[in-house]
Length: 509
Image (cartoon, rainbow, N blue to C red; front, side, top):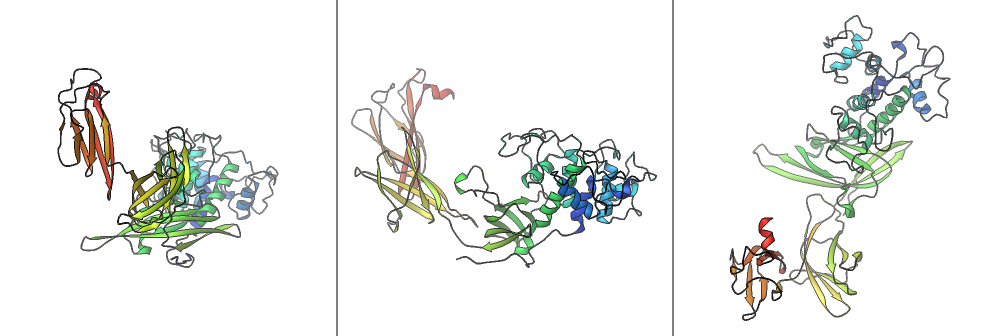
């Protein structure tokens, strides 16, 4: 059963619509009031910003709003850099910060006589800017691309994705030159995942390069749009104490269950567990699972979960999000290693013989000279038996353990192939097998032999590990088999045995 829920209008929706959204704008541009050379922004036809330039739209949109301005000669100077003092002044105006009644920020190079003193003090107090390690602020320093990323994150109050310095796979992170930019790399990584920043090449960001006014205009407009569309989820909106997890089905290691495209991204808050940010990326529908806990005053905990189809639509160029609550369970692809022989049928039943599906659809996912693997859909939970019947009249059985975690769409399945009785012939092997003994002898297996031969029959009885030792084999002789490692796995009444020989060389591993 699927229950429709439109997120719009609910108290759960937390949209970022404060003027704070614009604060980042300030960071990057020389405000009209920060330079005597600037002209009023209503004359926003800049002779050095042709409308066919990729950054022109961003520049003119910000100029129309009196957020940025040009120079008295009619130029915008798109390739010029921005100083930290100018950015602080613009930010203070956007946020309407009190620049008169401020406390001294304590920067060694920012005196009360400095024209941008009040703005720097107010912006620093809000946590938008930090000084350098030596106690200075650098009001005349150009803002770097790395610093700009952190300014955007702080100004728009984005949560952070963590940058994994141990992973150099471009599927996880494309910029290999930000590893040592410790204070800014998470900001860069986050903005890239949200589609706000790009690199100077496919695998470089150039973090220490000064950002230009044109680049800043583009980043500001992108960040402002994304943040205005971002939804903040509060655990309290669900009557939970905190979130314990989420799944947006973008796990690169679980490709069979992944969404084909990224429709939304979820960013956890790394300082608190009671909020998540959900950022729409493009139109479409994506699955989302949320889990949380409620802590009772008695100390007891109650774990909860919800599942949604998240629908993202575009309304006049703005992405909107609707949540459709559901109880759907989607068949999980389950893999069976089968014989090379053609398959006639695959049947699925419970351990007590109740038929689940008399003829499962299957797909061959791997076929080589050595093995053949098929995928079957499993939606039922519990202990199950899959029987594969071949055209030659033979069959194999598989035990399947199917479990559904809280709020998950797909069951998780584990599979073993039935092999509860295995014959091991050591006649051609090196060693003395006249005597054998079970090292643990804990009822995991049962062993018999054919008379005085070196043929052993091993039956699995329960889960566990057993070692069959051959005490008369010479443990100082290379190539000598000293025993057998026996691993037993069970799912219901299906038993699987895996047996490996233990020889002289294995003693030293």
